[in-house]
Length: 115
Image (cartoon, rainbow, N blue to C red; front, side, top):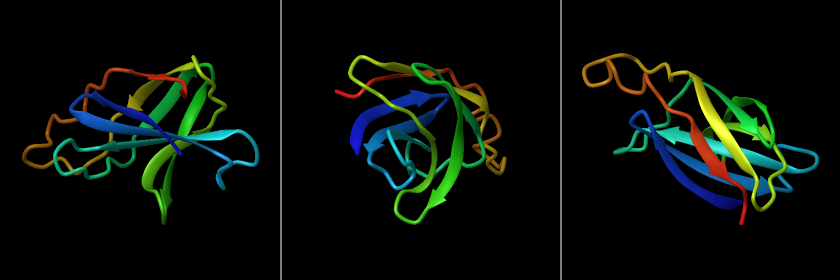
């Protein structure tokens, strides 16, 4: 797939990729969003993530044997397209020392289209 870069929000790092001709969709492309902790890259599970802009809707949490835990959606991106990703519900990590307030307030992320 095509690397769309990384973004940060609320202390988390979001790795973004776009794949075409994917086994996840019959036609078009598939947006992969992988939110992780910034230092040891642990996936952040059970968040509600939505997109707006050139395409709108919810991203679905998926556990895949090749990609791992990610959030994805069918979307056709072209050069110049822009998507806005919004965390509707923060990740549901076990709240222990160091994570009591982490990842609670997450600003929207803007994704530029493919190059």
